[in-house]
Length: 628
Image (cartoon, rainbow, N blue to C red):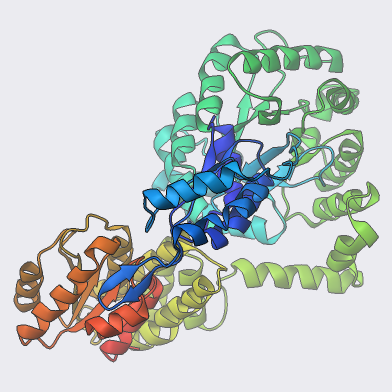
């Protein structure tokens, strides 16, 4: 999808949310949909639908033509069915004759038997998924985004700053976290509002799945609504009120759910008591329509100070969970050493024992070298690291070099402490650090750094890097928008601190969707990116008459006009609008774009440039105006 969601991720989430059929429509021809159907079929047993266009559109004169005839279209039907499609139809460019031919081809073909996909538990982010279970290699859930016991982090969150939250997220991912636990438990703030913002910020910043860590149902639902994927809910216990509030949320939003063996009475001291409580939660979850692959179990980790056999009972619980349920297991590691010296050492020893007893996903601090090394070593010893490749890659150097190497990796990923202030600002924009970049720009200006150097050598260079990564598929639209927002914050800071600094405010750009077309997602993205690059943008909206666009160009003295069409039926309005601008004698450059447009069409229509995406549009505007 435009935001980077692959077929597998979409299918896993839709399956969990209760879809009856998943599929792909429009966008491509049948030949291009075949491998995508195969990818859907690799993760779900749901029926799959495929509705391709009648081939990839071509421009003949001023008419958009879809090249595949009914006979050519039906030739792809056997391959679509063999790939896993249960239903086949057609979209743009098709006619009743196409549908008839497809139906006949489907009726005459006996598809290959579709392999049954064994149930599995997975978390998804917007762009990827992580499997967890006893046959999968153990994963790390990063624990650092938690203000408990962290006064500075709690203070920042309370003040509305998420700089430390984002730095902790990036640092944990760089250190190997597969999932990030998000706890926003700060007094005197609205838990739903703060959780919603945290999930929004982090889901744009990192590619790994998130765990929504709260016992507040309102905050839990706010996070679930905002999250573009299948998260882990951490957690639900056996109290009837909790079950009644949390289980429907997990079902409605397709989340995985961590079951914590606690009830209204005393803490369950033995493994047997914990297993019985887990059974209560699991049966209640089944009654609400949740599946086995939606559930994970927590063995309940108590500090060693609470009793000499507390750790032993946790290990016994893990083993009994594996035998009784077979579900994945998650536990907070650091609780075991609370109140004791040498905590990293105790944690690492307990971690290896727990992994050997059936732990699949510890919640830990991946930045702690002792604990992280124990985790990698245990995964290797348990047979999840063939030829010890991961262990050797991480720890194949001597001790001193290993520490230096790890520190170097961490600095490269998340540090903004270079001696070069422009480099710090550039990295902050690339990472989408909206709050931090303001501080860095203010400091650079106070130290006498030329604002034009900041603009050219830091801000513009950062967006060039982001643009290259976007073009290479290494980042997606949300990260681009985050970087652009950081850049806008930097521009505004320069204007605020040095209102007379020249060269910052750029030209006016008009944007509009042409007459008859009511789509505006792409236009809105381009407008936001242009604004965040310092341009003044006048957005005329959608379904805009050519005359209105001409009048706006005159009124606003615009130097660039960006027009788009998302439908084949409205493509001719691109030609009409450009013709109106030219007849009015306006010198403005015309940039066109939209899903159905091509470079060839733009050239024939007389446009000055064509942009296939938002990043390209910004770069073209810069070049058209000599701002590059």
